[in-house]
Each structure stands twice: as C-alpha cells, then as structure tokens.
Image (cartoon, rainbow, N blue to C red):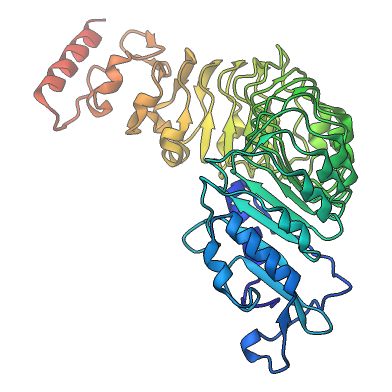
Length: 494
C-alpha cells in the first residue's frame, strides 16, 4: 500500500472511472505508474506506526492548503500534517530521507462509498498551487465547477515531468482544450468527459506517445479528428461531439485499442480499410454519424470484436457481403439499424453463435429470415422489424419465449408464423402486429388462408381452428365466445 489504504486511491479511482464509462465489455485496465527516482515506491508503514520522525514536505503542505481552500474545503488548513491527515483523496509517498510527498489528489463524490472531498460548485477553481507539487501523478476533479464555469487552466501543462492521470470529468469546463496539455508527455489517462469544451482537438496531444485512455466525449468539439497515432492506446472515446470529416486512416496504427467510440458526431465518408490493424478491438461504436457504404471487408479482420454498433448511418443501398462477418466468432452485439441496407440477410450471421443482441431493423432487407437463426442459442434480443421480409418465421417456441418483447418482427407484411413456433401463445404477441399464421390447408374445400385476421390474434387461439369440425373447451369472457362463434360460422360457410 502506498499509504493509508489497503486499496490504493489511484486503483480505487480507476475502477470507479471504468464503471462510470459504462463499457459494455469492460476489461481489467490498470494505469501503470512509472517510478520516481526520488520516491520509495513500495510498501510503507502508516505514519501512526513510524517511529523515525517522518514529515510532509513543507512547501507541498502549503500548496495542499491552497488547493483545498480553492475547492471550498477550508477545514483542511486545520490539519497539522496533510499526509498524516488520512482522508480519502490524498495519497503520499516518502523519499529516501523519510520526507513525504503528495502524489495524488482527488475531489468529487463519485458514490456513497468514495468519500473524496467534495467541491463547492459555486466558487471552486483549480488553484495554481498544483504546480508546487513536483511529484504529483494523479489529479481528479469530478463535478467541481458546474456553477462556476471556467476554462481548463493552461498551467496544468507544467506538470509534464510527473503527471500520469488527469481527470476533469463533468466539471462544466468551457473554452478549448489547452495546447499545453501536450506537454504532459508522461500522461497515461486523459479524461475530459462531459464538459462544454469547444474548438478542435489540439494536435499537440500527439506528443503524449504513451497515452492509454483518451476520453473527450460529451463536449462540443468541432473540426476533424487529427491523424494521431497512439501505439499504447486502449480506450478512445470521442462520442457526442460535433466532429466532422472522415475517420483518419492513422487510426489503424493504434494496435492496442480495445474500445473505440465515435458515436453521435457528424463524421462522413467510408469506414477506412486500415481498421484491419485493430486486432485487439472489442467495442466499436460509430452510430449516428453520416458515414457512407459499403461496409468494408476489413471488418472481418477484427477477430477480438465483441460489439459492433453502426446504426443510424446512411450507408446507401448496399447489401451486407455474404462473408462480411466471417472470422468474428466472438461477436456478441451487432447493431445495424436504420442504415438503408438492401438485399437479403446473409446466412453467415447465423454462424455467429455468440450473438446476444442483433438489430437489423429499419432497413430494406428482403427475402426470408435465415433458417440457421434458430440455432443462435445465446440470442436474447432480435430486431428485424420495419423491413420487407417474407416467408415463415423459423424460430421455435423456446426461442420465442426466451426473447419475448425483445423479439421484434412487426412491419414485415410478408412474414407469417407456423403454429408450432409459439408466437400465437406469446403473451406479448401484440408486439408482432400484422404477422399471421402461415397458410393452413382446409380439407373440406381445398382452400387455404395465408394470414388469419389480425383481430383474431386478440382472441385466445384455443377456440379458433380452421377445421370446421374441431371444437375446444375453454373458459373465456362471453364477448369473446360470441366473437369466436361468429368466426367459426364464417369459416364453416366458406
């Protein structure tokens, strides 16, 4: 333990950050802090157990007092030794002379379990005294300046020799991202999520070669995505901005990427073929942009991909290549809704046996639902609604019951279901309006019915049978019995 906690503050902070990011497929991700030559980076005894006259660096203690007062935490000035104060949110480490230095400061109530000092949002600011902490590795401010909007101070760029984690999350920061942040060349994590930052992404960030997580999401950033290359980058989140232009081909050089989220921007052009270099990528979300088709064949090179979300892009009238997803055996989430895709649904999708979620709704797919979809035993959510599909629904009763409302087939006028599918017994069958029973032979006349009346679906199927000599004993309201009798009489007279 660095000091005070059985779980170091930096690790606790990182775990909480990952939970806030809501990664659908979160992986263990650790910020590796490089050692400082002047600090003893190993297990240390707590101050209360130290018999050898430890002390906090006097200059750093005064700096912490200033920083605490700037966030509305004046109580800290009454603590005679800040490193001995043992509050959550500060972490200290000793040098060889037993002088302790501040290496981590965190502010903001992430949850009830993280008692970091909170900020007074009406008057808080980031104190320049932070630059007087020569060993600082982690700075974390969460929801601290919401009612006192201010730019990100350029003087943070002076922390380049030591700072490795900078989190300014949901603070209401305004203005541009300072180019001086590019001086933080030892930075591993830069998180500016959900502020009101505008202007472009500074090219100077490209100097941070060892960056592992870059989150600029939820701002008002404009311009194009610069052609940056981060060989160690694991997480890249630029979602919910106003970014334009194409996806830079240099993205394919970020070979360590695990998560890439560019959703809800104004990006245009095709998905670059260079993405085939992202062998470790697990989540790619490009939804709600203006990307054009066709889907690149290089997608199938993403052998580690588990979630692919491209919905809401006008990809044109292209069909999905029959082999477009070959090799993506680990894919669990595939969302291609509202993309104006044409042609038939490729049977190769039925070979993705790990699929949990499949959305193909709001397109122009025709033909039948691939029969091998019934073998997708892990599928829990399927949307095929609002297409031009025809033929019988190939799913069995177990699959229909498993998905219930998460199976959406409506607005496919040519679809019908077989009696054994269980669709007619599904309590949520109203979720499939317009889909009737497939044609059933009528022995007495040789005639058949393609779709039974939509009204009929609201009557229990047990007392409706196309055979005129079949009667079932049931218990239903009188009004429904009368309706059933009318339908039976009509059927008999045909």
